[in-house]
Length: 553
Ligand SMILES: Cc1cc2nc3c(=O)[nH]c(=O)nc-3n(C[C@H](O)[C@H](O)[C@H](O)COP(=O)(O)OP(=O)(O)OC[C@H]3O[C@@H](n4cnc5c(N)ncnc54)[C@H](O)[C@@H]3O)c2cc1C
Image (cartoon, rainbow, N blue to C red; front, side, top):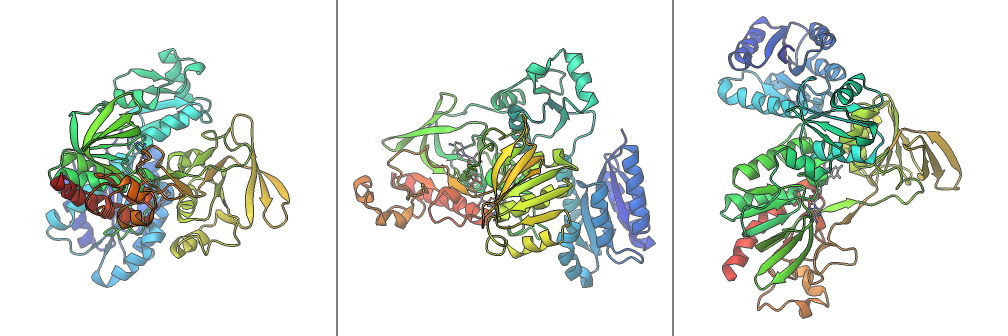
């Protein structure tokens, strides 16, 4: 296979020569650098590369070109190479246009000319974008391959585990992909042993549990120390931030997660409002960076590992683990966030993983290319899910009980949805039932105003109908509000059980729960703001509070 391509586009021969020279000087060993003098030529080159089966890693286009503006070239290139990174070269006077075009063209970065010195202004950006591209794309013939039945719950579970843990893999449908049959025959694996995971060393795992997969991928599953200063339960944004600060500020820190790093944010296809990312950032990219940062600074990370209970033993907290083990720590952070609420309609539970998915748009989206899918819910997560699915599916219907999305979704997402021709809003509608033989084939929709029903063909239903806190693993001494969110700081004082539980001669610290040295941050906490930035802020603050608690004991 040929090297992946970096394609530069500019009608100005001098600028084009400068981009080509700088890119070649640094990337020529791993990438081919090609150039085009117009948007039309660039798109033709991209099509030709595609037809040859080559990979396009990045397109860098000048904005001002006769015939086709850079923004249009980048937007149109998405149809050919959806994963390629897109960079716009702008003059200072075009920066407003570049910012406005972030949504349209899905720009990853805009770079003002000139970019001297390239070591400071060009290479760091390109390195970062190429790392992200590498993490998402996988050459055809290499790497992990997962062969299974699309509609089997275990297939979905392993796909979700690999994708959420940022492990690149190639999915092969046992029924539709000719390569799948050849692989299974060669390894002598029957249909009853699926899904099968083919590893790079030639070995195969038949119908594995996520934990076995983690083990074979060399992930650490047991703690290195007997006692920790800080154990962070849950590796969403709050937990990742606590791990970064805990490790960097001298606490022996362990982070663990029952499923994967990133939490809810990890399932977001595009976080638009996190400070410092003007072009937005995907949840998986933010997670990849945060986890690398936490581990580089010395935090230990274990996955998949669930905390099932906690007992308080003097100043120590003993955490019971799903593998039967135990962890001991002096302070603990509950950063276990929220989970999607289940939809009660008949047929939903039976088809979960077989066409019904909670969140999971980014894991399953590509499978539904050219098909019809429904998104249930009117919040921002439903909007982001619909936008992501619309890249692949022929039709995406958003099913909401309300008249419109105005009260529940951010305006920027409503505008994006309005401009996306294959997304349709189905207002004042609910799911009455889901039917199909082993997978979703039909969905019955009910009109909210008169209860009339109508059955339609559909291939998948993605559900985003709100969440509930994940706090049931905490002991009774950790007080919660009526909905199960964990009370912290001054909010505790209003709870009548507080005076019976709290025996310290001081008030609880800001994010401390009713058990001294046990903290809560992010979405699991009563009064949380339910945003990535606030979860990150709270997780970081907990480290300062943990130091204060340790100084008192
Ligand atoms: C699809 C989607 C899109 C979103 N988009 C945006 C956006 O654009 N901007 C924005 O600001 N916010 C967005 N949000 C909200 C944001 O993602 C959340 O507010 C944020 O993730 C909360 O972080 P957290 O760390 O508190 O919890 P979570 O992200 O919920 O993470 C909790 C983690 O704890 C783990 N866990 C749970 N129980 C246990 C246990 N017993 N043992 C071990 N591990 C456990 C879970 O597996 C999970 O990984 C979005 C949410 C979703 C679902």
